[in-house]
Length: 215
Image 1 (cartoon, rainbow, N blue to C red):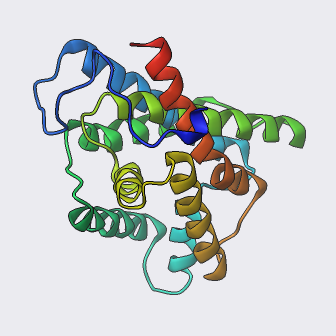
Image 2: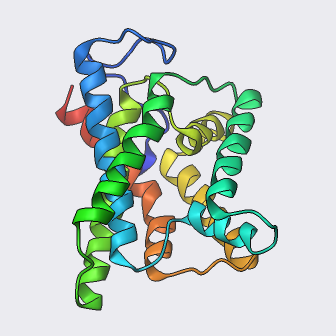
């Protein structure tokens, strides 16, 4: 069962090591495809108007208590998460850099060209699709093994320390972030809860499908 996956699978196009700035074309291709799906999912969640992602809720909650913008706080949170990589033994790579660039581009593209559904039911359906896209995209880009983004790297590091399934680690991490953000005053929507509870299993599904289909 994909929910029991504990390690990032290795396939024939996975990089031998994260710190690789001259990967094979196939490795770089799947990295970009995965990140594009990831960013598209994040953008669709925003467009659905059902609630922001857990980390955005955390940034919002913190912004209500300090005199800094949500954008600035998001940056500071990313830096703080990256510092947590050090004791967990995680290393950045090409994927860490492209994570920020491609995902940001896809989110902007979504917001500009994808309209918000007119009915709440369709908004919820879009939110469910968005969470699945983030998870599957995350699975594809993580298998490339070119370095994770801040949150995914934290997930991988915590999994190695706890030896728990990736789905459980990611779900616990996201739910904790939502709770802290909500306690600080962040606004939680149905989409937020869908993301918090669904992203762990969806990432595990993405890893499983990538291992079985794209090897």
